Image (cartoon, rainbow, N blue to C red; front, side, top):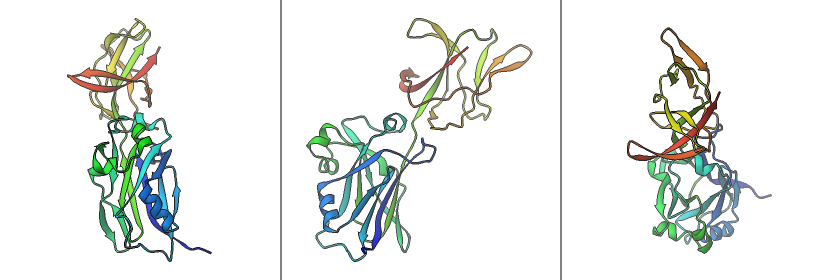
Length: 268
């Protein structure tokens, strides 16, 4: 019976998802990597959030092996594009996860957590262009994963940040005649005062925006409240406002900058 030894493990973490892992990822090896995997009887398994490569225990690297192993990373998760900070559009660039190693202990190497691990590179960049074939140039993958050929068991972590957007609450219906405010009881996020703005159907509603970006999350811990500010007392009208989802985005110019806005509708 063949005995296997893990050689390479890659895990893609994502701050949006409750379990902290990306999902729906598919790793397509380039031609050189396919040849290396076959030539070494390697087993390559995808986990949805990464991959695992194992070798028979009696196999070792050869003198003519490639210096790096490369995979084109595709995603079947429609959410990924909407919830990932810094994810390029379909063209003309993609993410390049190019691992840098640091020695963490005598038996295992780990990826260095450098900002450059997930930089966006132009499709024309030689290191990117060489890994793309005709079909993937027409429909580029989400990212390229490129790692040095391991000489011992190695683990990598790629960390994707959740997208931050300005949260915009649309208050529809007959609200209190007293001034309204959206409040963060944790005192971390500040919101603008409500202003009347037209909706796309011609109706007018009150709009309230966060003054800074707020990270999207599958299970957001945000507990914003809608309060009224009367002359004598402050009342809580909505104890916990709904949070932004992975859709209902708009683009607005705020302080002269085109900004992604999450629209949240609150009816009364």
